[in-house]
Image 1: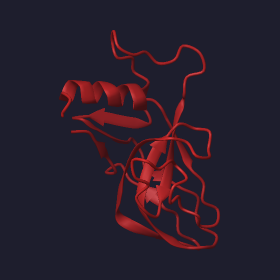
Image 2: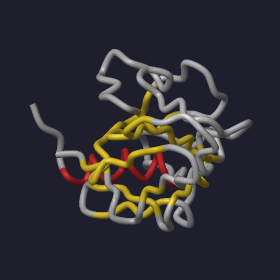
Image 3: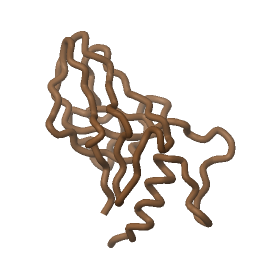
Image 4: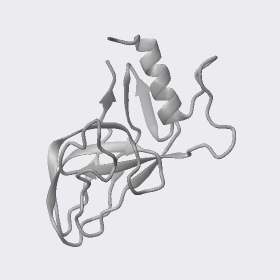
Length: 142
């Protein structure tokens, strides 16, 4: 089953830019989410996973907030990507290889994943490494 490109863009704009989808969905009038949390993963969190599933654990790691606006995310052609590079805290110890990322609501813990995707090339984390997702990192619906 497929959905139209117009619908894919409307969903992405609603979720990542807080843009109302006329006659279907509006951004919450009280206490709307103002950021999208981005997490790194060492394995595919899968459709049944949450933001803690295979989440990176290097020392100093933390999820990063990106504004839920057109200043934080670019939505075009059934795809969404960050407007600017997303830099995670530099590792002060530990290690691992990040190969996936996810997006979700802010708040921490076992938050449901909105979308996830691959990190290419993978990032080997550790002491002194600052993992980054560039503007070419994208989530595409089709």
